[in-house]
Picture 1 (cartoon, rainbow, N blue to C red):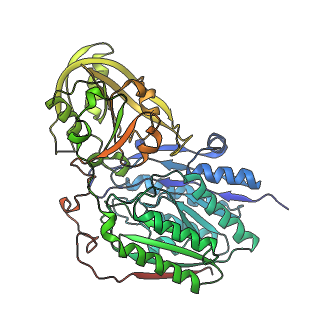
Picture 2 (picture 1 turned 90 degrees about the vertical axis):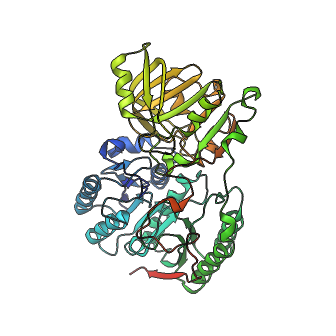
Picture 3 (picture 1 turned 180 degrees about the horizontal axis):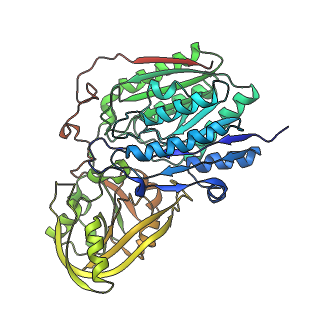
Length: 495
């Protein structure tokens, strides 16, 4: 029997409709070919899951390209078009048995509300109805009918904070292989509800624990072949945004539809429990001078991981105003400040103004300090568990020290979900008293061994005060609007 071949790759990014900074090509890490396959073995990423599944199954992978970027504003249309053309050209060459795509599901471009659906539809038009196409998405994806129509199977993360990226892709890979083997005939029942979860939506505590346990128990009982629950991220101003429940049956529809309807009803019944307020910054820092170890803060209002710009100065200004003088690592996206430091040179003492260009809730900081670090194209390999083994790069940085404040300035926004970001610029995370990250959930897994982790309530573009935005397409949705319980239904049988 000839060795099976699988086409994989694509583009993965999470977009924020209200972030004015377009995500351009330089924001993406781009990999391709056999070298990408070798480097991603064992990585806890969706692509790593595809790679590991292929090795375990003796399947050859075709990787025309894979563009990956951290969250931000909508993706440049030209970048998306470039990826589509590369993937479509590869599909036209044929000589593969299935398509398995490690995507995100929450991406926008300037003009497209469902770019993933557009990419998959173009691939489907080339490969025809017989070649399986499956995909793996983040659980914060915005899943809609146009995404599902060209897909045979879609799997979503089961954990938040995310620690099952690889396992999610392995489910998608297994589905493709089982379709080829004739042991899986996917029948989809999906339900959608225009509501958002705001804060109390981890799988470690809160209402999702019971709901996701119910979903997985349905799989164990044979009521569904696979279940994914998508809690759409909160900053997509697109039509029909909200919750999505996908239940796949194996050639059996009735029970899958019952499970999907039961789960969406469970979500609706506890809708108020998904909303919480994060702790206040001042309370978390009350006794920081006498604390025994570091505190790692998630800046809720400016989470690059959720599409924020990464230049808020809110926490730093609080430290300065309250004369909290402990060793602090504070990251800021400010390309102009990086260039100023670069021109001045290492070890030079200068006056510098930085931050607050896009996050306008707190003013820029002006202070005098010393440039203690400069660098470019510095590799960062996550220690995990979230995205363990994933390698990215800090394109250009400067470390600016003012008294006990170590400001990490970069020319691109980063989420700092892993201690490796700070080590990459020469800062030891265990030596700090305060570390600020541009993340709300995922940093908590990766920093748990460093110190106490907490997400604090701060103003900004990624805070859950949704009435700050000028919504044009997504409303009505709960909790901004009083809506009736009218879930939308969608079904799909493989042709």
